[in-house]
Image (cartoon, rainbow, N blue to C red; front, side, top):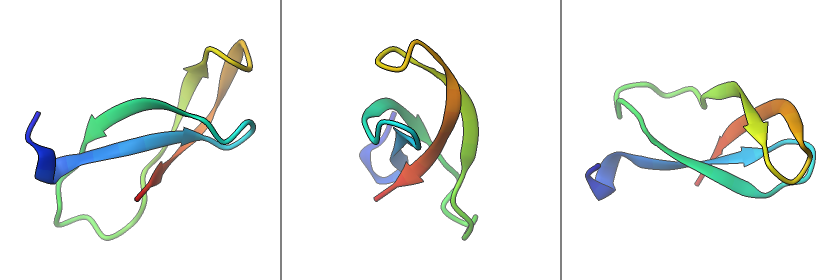
Length: 50
């Protein structure tokens, strides 16, 4: 993945970064996905961070 499109996905429950993903830079809204958090041990919403 190229560095300019790389984003961090942070768990909304425990606030830890568990995933990295790429994003189309034309999108202005922040991505929110349900992902598995290995610290919470369940699926939680993950939001894009800076």
